[in-house]
Length: 503
Image (cartoon, rainbow, N blue to C red; front, side, top):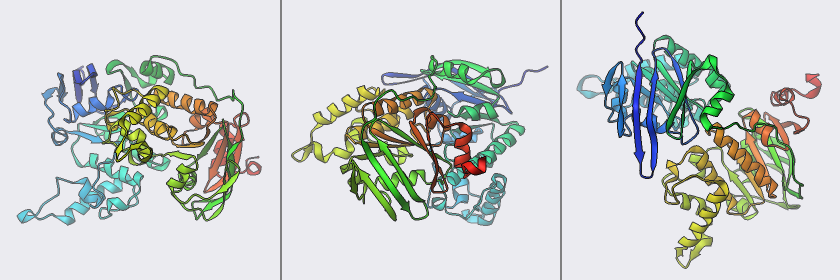
């Protein structure tokens, strides 16, 4: 019997940047009709390997082989022409253009004299959108779509070419549960057509649901490939990080202080209504709920990004009004946003400037910023948070997701807040860095911070929280201490089921 030929193979790939060996003799292959997971901590080399495959980086050593033919990738367009399609985690869409124009950008069907064949363009696009079961059509402006629907436009691009291999990079990060089901159906269809799928995700439940094999990178080196059906999360985690993780539920090991933040009857239009809770110094309060439950909107209201329509906010026992982020910062409230790249960082700036951005005016010596003071702040929080970077001059956009998140946290800790709100603290972060962020959150509470954590991941909110606020449709359904909460009663609460109905 003839052995199957890989759809795509990388052999002995080496890539070095100044001071960093990002890839060290890495080999990887995906078979036709296979879903092959590529896993590793942030900074393990996954993104660099994919950029080599996509023609963004030229390898220092090694070969790329498509259908047993060595190829040289010089650009993403050339990669696509050879049947290698990328679905990026970071959206790369033109918001002012239509869905159809984005999907066929650079390949618009033409009529005589170079005119765009709009009828054909819309027909082709709507046929693809029908497969994805989305609620918008070819003529919709991309900028008017939700982030989740924009992600579906990215996915639609993969269906326009005769793909040999499709790379999905964290494709479900912005999708609802219903949209995930559609995505997995699309992947199953591509698999049935003999397309090789490379699936990059930190979500173990997805990896074990849809993949056939799992390959692991660590510190730029290949660590092994396992059949999904013959391994488990513990084995993959140890391959990724070289150690076991402590995933036990949180327990309080320190004294709680005074109430730092108290909210009474807070409402904001249709986003949330009649919200009341308090957070003490030394305490982590977790907010858990489905998409649209109002959790992020509460954080944005406390940070002055939204005006409340009713209710009161008390800080250190004093009623206060917050009309802007500047008000919130001045009163000791800081927000680590859900979208760290879009709202928390300036990716083209270096680490030092990102960390000191909110306090530039306070660091001025005359008309200039005191560079020595900025570097001192960066050095302090780099050491405290174990931020892994060659130095302060490194662009934040070049850091791993976990280290980017630490830069955002360090930025706000350097302002010495009394209340720290962290929205989706580990979204898009690998399992090892997740553990570090969780330990950091607990450590901040132990040092007297009042911390609010908003998370869509049940294990996370159970692990870090002293008590949990369960929300449904803009309202608090129940609150739980870490001792009384169970997965069952938490799921019932965020689904709108009250205790009497559950009984």
